[in-house]
Length: 148
Image (cartoon, rainbow, N blue to C red; front, side, top):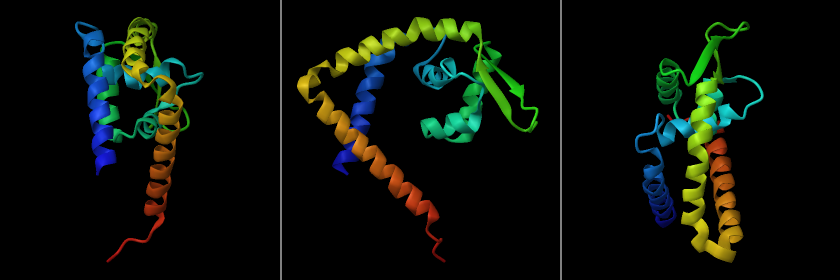
């Protein structure tokens, strides 16, 4: 439990630190988090991939994408192969907003993590191990037969 509690605390501290970047901004931090992979994608992306990448529900991603679409930050185009699927791209307005906000967020995060010093690579290695282990456990659990 202490690992999970520390992870939650770290996420909360990062969220608190970046709040100032988004005060009065046209986007929220969670919206920018969704837009970053879209901003640098070489082809349109589907919502399911965004949800998988961020570990969010499809419903939550769909709701956020609908808001971004209404505000002109993304476009959703029906797929020619499957009309139930929308291909999502960032609009020029979305690109400008991300390009204006994200560098500030990175500076805040970098300053917050600067206290790690030489231990940064060890922390990164440990977190990578943690994430890979958790992904493996979840994948294994999803393949186990359900208990009656």
